[in-house]
Length: 191
Image (tube, rainbow, N blue to C red; front, side):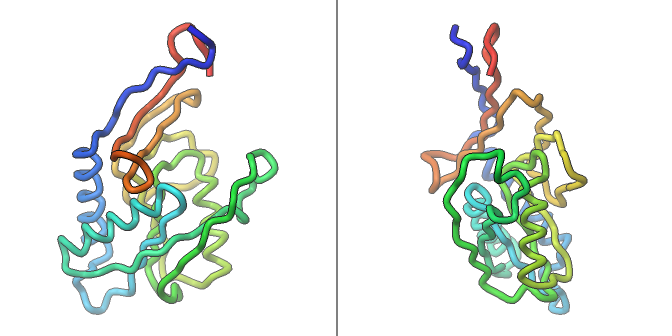
């Protein structure tokens, strides 16, 4: 077995992902009181790349369950990251915020919460855009290992991992199918 071989196990299949999105949508409806006309505007902002299709799905589920349409946008955090020198350069992705965030409840959406650095960058980015009434966080997977004091308000699945393991979220239309996998060094190999 080569040193780079990894074993992979499926943690969530397409049905599990669908149920998890539905659960997050119900939690958002309850926590934000969407059906109350005095509630502030709620906006979902997906963090590219996996957070964008996840935010779109959550919005569809929220509308299906509550009858309330939530605007969905995207927020690229690349220029706000504190680890730009340590990572390969990546192309900037569009930031699309369809409504004014001042006074709104902004729910950041990401596929995996790990160190918290992406979310910190998103918070810094939002500070330059406006002043929301509240900022919340929804993630499909929380894998632990936080480096910053960041906590998700809506978590699809808590998956404790070791640092040498990787969690991969695949979501259509970016990927061929919906699934979450965990890969780790194969026995006798290292990452």
